[in-house]
Length: 301
Image (cartoon, rainbow, N blue to C red; front, side, top):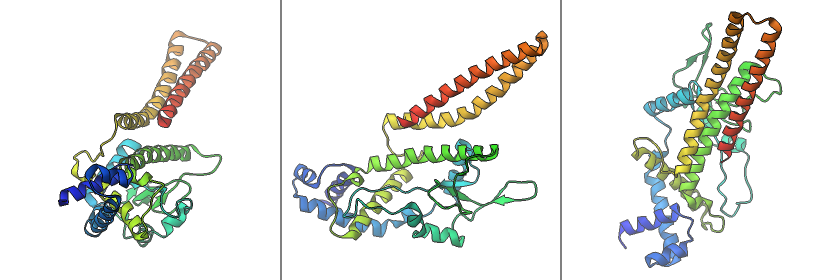
């Protein structure tokens, strides 16, 4: 078989949920050949294409920060951290907690030393206070200067509520699409009934899928993986919802302002004005609740 044929076998294996015997039968090779070719390919890929798993350079990081600023209003944010479970392997029923995974990672060590997330700082107060680059994560992660998690108190100030809102919107939008697209593309990672004998091969397979995923992103001008129309629709709906939340608040404030001015111009007495305002507020609250409920249903879909 030619090199192109061998690579095609491996890509089909990683891209589909078909068992190796099925793939082998369609191309005229046995199951052991499919497994051997896959193991050899991912070993070479992980050895020679590690540069596709590097931390973003300054130019790409600028684009990432601009995206978080424009869409999510998270200034100076450099990304979202998360963990996901790959449900195959001899220990597929066990898992580590996210804190342990983070603490044992090179990301943690390099950020703690200041080798990463050390770019431009953001001035946040008139007294000159600044916030450095950071990533965001759920409450399961520790709160660190470079890793910001949501507030957990029961009663929050308006500013804390707003931070949690933006944090949640950015985290949900990114993880629901990025992780779902990654695992949906490389369906091999959803395999639960087979695992390689060599544990190093298991790690190489996961890394190889990450490398291939990044290669495809690097090759596309819009930095987007191929996806179904349903995924694209869901993503755009979430982005539009983020913008609509600010619009709803602006509309509510304007509606109250317009109502107060109208009441003043028409000479409506205080009691009637109060009843009218209460009625208007109720209608707006119902409308906002309906929009919020609709947005939640779209996220679940």
